Length: 355
Image 1: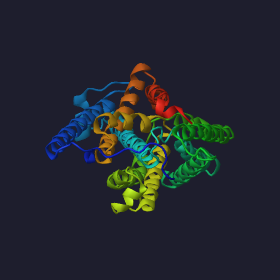
Image 2: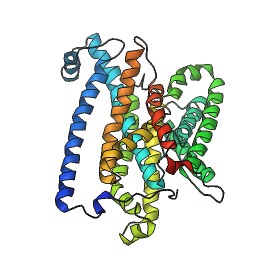
Image 3: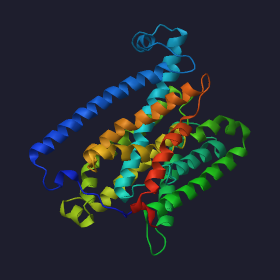
Image 4: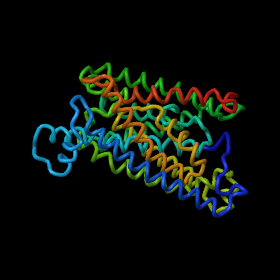
């Protein structure tokens, strides 16, 4: 993928900002990051406590520190803890993937769901499970990686076709169109096997319900690798935001940075989709919200996105369990309810209106 669209400058290099002011801003952002971590920890505890049967926080802490084999402790350790950990990993992965895609393509509408990458990964998983009967997460995650990579290539090829080239809205339209095609193909495959469809119908909507500790353990290395690689690219992406020539003059390998970013996005989207299904808007809404107080500096934008994206995902999951108790609304639906207004506001902005 090659960049196109609006170039954002790194705020620390803007004229008029003294070293003292930059140091004060960095201290404030660091303090905010620590406060956000505390809020995320509290939300994790709520995610474990809230469900079809609410459990006191004291019982949650007892189950985590001194399990006694009771029903509540068993439910917490075998069902709710894996679900919450998966929400943490999937949220961080999708948010970081969205931030990386927006930075690499300089497209403010870039999002793993909106550009069809998640539905490409979902189609790969559907082929593995529905046609090939490959039920091992460590195996079918590779099909998710292949589907995510293929989708990214096709979306960019379609969105950049013609003399006008790739624009934010053209890429978004290409992504939505291909995403619907991939979703239809996945549905057609599942209709051929009723048992597989019953097992995967909630997954296709986007759901954290029903993960086993085995799934979380099998997919964790891919999620961690993608997050670590993505965070390491903050400096090179800052340099490329000034333009390819400026990036080269600062010693950044343009091709290498783009390739590593594509690898990170594929790892993040593939593993997150294999775990929770195709989820929309996490990678769109959170980076834009974070950018309002960090600016475009990737050294702050990426860590904040990694921290706050699970807040959105876990918060949506908790809300879905509360409003439909004793049942639940899938987290994919709740994320769309939260994220769709953000997309509408972005699409209506004047600088994104022209094709």
